[in-house]
Length: 230
Image (cartoon, rainbow, N blue to C red; front, side, top):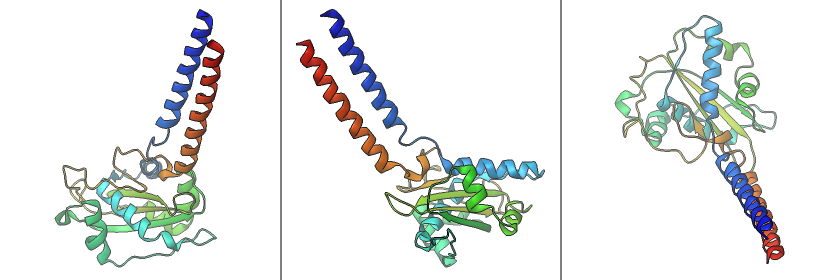
């Protein structure tokens, strides 16, 4: 009887640990920050100075990507240029960027794919894949960078990546209010923050299904253990 109770308890512990792992894996890391690291490594390899990772610029990049969600074609091309006024009248307020600190945006790269790409793949296949984007990436006048990533629909792609560059003075522009917290975004990822957003919410539906299946599995088998025990 004691052995059965011990096995039952061990089974309960294992199920609990599995559930904790699955739940904790739902939002880990920030792909936008990973892309900034890749951009800076590329610049360092060319003996260019690294760019500051600006959360304000990253949030604006996310707003830019969200504005262009409906422009990704089936062959993974995107052509979208929001009105210039949107940056100060829509994007910056949506992020909580203090308008007096709005700096100079010196370039952008926009890319899309129908499926999710890991940061290194997104860099090579969606963003920096021609001479224009490579030249922009290695521009010597850039001082800051911000990356935004968003998925167009909840359960499927396409995914959009936006990289914004600034030539303003480092760490004095695109300042977020509320002591740098700004307005927390409910969709997508943007760089320069500690907010975790695993794969721009790529697997929300899938992970939810896995969690429920695991819960039911544990409940059924736990009941069987109890039935045998008593």
